[in-house]
Length: 144
Image (cartoon, rainbow, N blue to C red):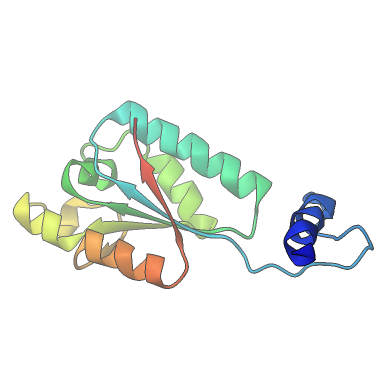
């Protein structure tokens, strides 16, 4: 019974800003790993995602991020439709991976030539996301 009461105290005594316990011991954490799912062609949602990515990479520079675009979300990675292509290039240089779902590409008659050069490809977006979750990645649905 005493252990249950002490565990919350340890969590409260941790200094979140420095990853140190109250006694000064450094708590080693693995980098955060986050996978976003984007299924909307709403350009406002695309811009909001870029803002989120900027906030996250600024606050947590070691974060690992992947974005999986499928269905209408493929528009964000299309050369002729993307309103955030320069931002995608910038985040790719920072290590963020933008994935186009090949299943959705086939379904929508979108060729690799129509996709931004900075994009990567996954065979099936949903399956890829589920596998990443199994590997400990946190899932975030992007959009409004």
